[in-house]
Amino acid sequence: MGWSKQWRITLASLANPLYGHARLAGGVAMTAWERFVETFLKPEMIAQYWPDILAGAVVTIEIAAAVVVTGLALGLLLASIRAYRMAAVNALIVIFVDIFRALPPLVAVLLIYFGLPNVGIVVPSFAVLWLVLSCVLAAFAEEIFWAGITSTPKGQWEAARCTGLSFSQTLAYVVLPQAIRLGIPPLTNRTIAITKNTALGTVIGVGEILNQATTAQSFTGNATPLMMGAIAYIVLFIPVVAVGRWIETRFAWRRA
Image (cartoon, rainbow, N blue to C red; front, side, top):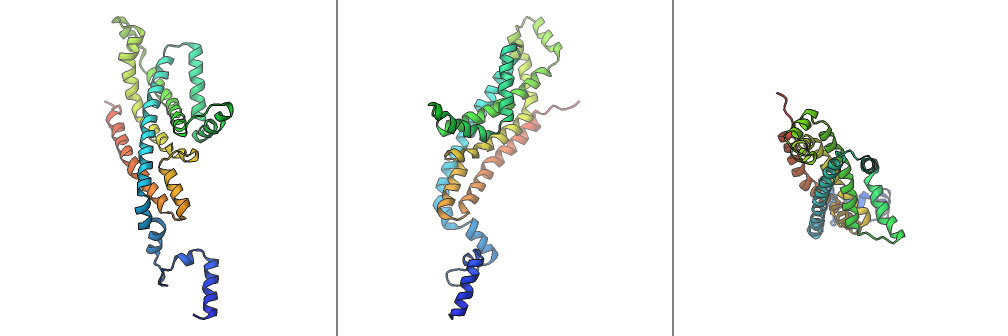
C-alpha cells in the first residue's frame, strides 16, 4: 500500500472514529447490519456477560418485590390510621406523604446514602434503595387508599355501626375492602412506575441490571452489555405490565 493511500486511511480514521470499526480484520467493509451487531449484539460479549446480567436481574427482582410488599402495606396502614382522625398523627402522615411525593427518589437515595455516614449512620446500598422506593410507593399508596376510604358513603359507616360493629371493625370489614378495590387500578400503574426505579441503585453500587450493564460496558467499550440490560428490563417488566392491565380490567368498577 502506498504512502499516499495509507495517509488517506489514517486521516479518515481520525476524522471518523467509526471508520476503523466499519472494517473487518481482512479489510472488507462492514455492512450497516454488521456494524449494528458488532456494536449492540456482539456474540462474544453476550456469552461473556450474560451471567452478570442474570445476577443483576435477580437483584432487581428482589428489590422490586420487597418494595411492592412494604410500600403497599405501609401505605394501607397509614391510610387506616388516618381514618381515626387524630389531628397530630394525621398531620405527621400528611407531611410524610407530601415530602415523598414531591422529592425525586434519586435525591432521597443520594441524601441518605452519602449524607447519613457524616452523622455516624451507615446504611447498606441495598437497604437505602429499598427504603427510599418503599417510602415513595407508600406515600402514593396512602393517598390512593385514603381516597377510597373517604369515597365510601357515610350511610355504610352508619349501617355497619348499627349492627354492633365497632369503628375498627367497620373500617376493616366494610370500608377497607371497598377502598382497596377502588384503589387497584391507579395503584397498579404507580407500582410499576416506582419499581422500575430500581435502576437508580446503580448510582450507589447496588448490583442490579443497570449497574451490571454499565460496569461491563465501561470495561469493554461496547454497547452490547447495555443492550442486554435493556432486553432484561423488557423481559422482566412486560409480563408485569400485562398482569397490571389484566388487574385493572378485572377490578375496575363497571357501570350498570
